[in-house]
Amino acid sequence: MTAEDGRRIVRCYSQDGEDRLDFDVSGLSLPEALREPLIAALAARTAPGAGLTSRHSFKKSYLALVAFDRYLTALEAVPQSAAEVIPGHFDGFYDHRKAEGIQTASNELADLRLLLLRTAGISDALAGRLAGALPTRHEGEPAHSYSRAELKRIAQAARTALRSAESRIRGNREVLEHFRTGDLDVSADVHLRRRLQILDHLDRVGDVPRRMRKAGGVIAYAPETWVMSKGKLKDVVGWLYLTPEEIAAAAVLFGVMTGQNPEPILKMTAAHHRADGGIGPGTAIVGLRKPRRQSRAYMDLALTEVPDWISIPEQPDQMPTRDILHTPFGLYVLIHDLTARARHFAGGNRLLTAYMASGGGPGAAKGRGWRPIRTDGALISKLGRDWNLPSDDVDEKGKPLPLRPLRLETLRMTYIELHQKPVAHTQRTATRYLVRNRGNVNEYRTVVAQALTAEVAKARARSKITMMTAEQVAQVQEDVDGAAAGMGLEPLVLKRMLAGELDTVLGACTDNNNGSYNPGEPCRASFLLCLGCECARALPRHLPLQVVVHDRLAERHKQMSPLQWAERFAGPHAQLADLLDQADDTAVEDARKTAGPDEHKLADRLLNRELDIR
Image (cartoon, rainbow, N blue to C red; front, side, top):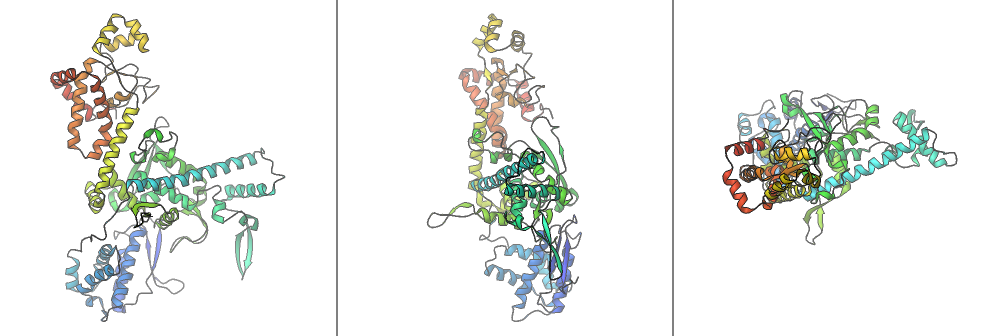
């Protein structure tokens, strides 16, 4: 199509229809007989249903076309039509981009191939070359994830920005509320009165007070001069709302804790379902959409109040218990609250919405206004430059080098590397991510070691199951009332426990309704968690099953990935090891020998989660 200013553009729409992008093709310099088929191929490649679904993928195809145009027009013999483009031009383009130091040359070549396959009139020789193999990724252009230390720096920077934003916004909300209820006297302070006038206008209208100004026959509405004396427009609006940079920080933190693709994060909605029912650990289920998955594009993401293990410090007791920004659920709830009025003014239900003072980019909304954050990652890249975080690498003088560019794609790769599991894709795709990122094998080993240390530390920091020896059991039977008083139990409870009526799996439970995991209601926790519950008691008759479960956990260490085992079983294994250490070595060996088929079957059912309440 032709724009109003005479430029020739190719207009692309995202699959959901929310984003639009215009590409200027009027600057292409190739002969018309070659230029026109290439432009038609770009239009076909970016058309609805052609496979591309996002601004990022559209842009890659366009940039590949522009680079190919510049390469061909610089040759001594410029091909005059699509039929004259030969395999040497295709391979020469790759060599040329490599010589220029372009580290994404192999990706550009892949995009160019898909474009040329849609180009009408290409020769059979070129078609045959396009059907062949592409150069493999060169050793000089590996895909690098962040290290765990670098990831923590990124997460800390994002949390710091959001904590500051929360304090600022909630403080201004409180001041405005006092002003509106008449609890704040501003008659003697003109500066405070002006500030509150701005806050009130921002909350009611979603903009600062403005005045009409006419210049050159054009009417514009500029902020009042006394408004601009308070600072930049973005900062003044930020008194009550998250700035675009803080919205980008929230997107970064979602990337750190969920490992989702950039587009589902940036297009996350405020519509959600509280699966927890408002009781117990918070869980919000949010619908996401990943267009590349086609028929499986729509998926649910559970944002829980359980901190991701990457976020937990080496010493778990160092993490503030009320720091909601260490959990995906806490982050979602905070951003949901701080952007509620922004969504009201913007319309729609996109979570990450902010006031843009100007701009909007090609094909997007122009000028100031409320709108969702763009999905091209430019704001996040700028945020990384502003933070200027150090990497783990140092220069010749030992000075830390700047961190690699901040990208949600790299955060996703890091998440997959550290967790060693798929996220919204197949195991095969996850493996491809890991193969591309083989520079972090040592990092993975470090992560496993740190996960083991953290899980063991958490397990041993919890309450430990109380163990009763055979001698103590015999003394209890002689004086039940006295022993019950010493243990803080009711005599009837102690009698039932000795009779085996309160057995769980690895011990006995003295109070099923007031444990650590579901206080005030019947406990639904896994029986493995009894190992860290103050209501649990281990008696001699439980030792055979404890030994079998301990041995089964050791066997599973060889059957699972090291990281999966560390995350799921390192804690219970350490608790059982500590429990067996309290018993006599002979008693442990006797228990191992006397454990029969029933104990082995029960142990397998426990570890296979057949006994859990789903």
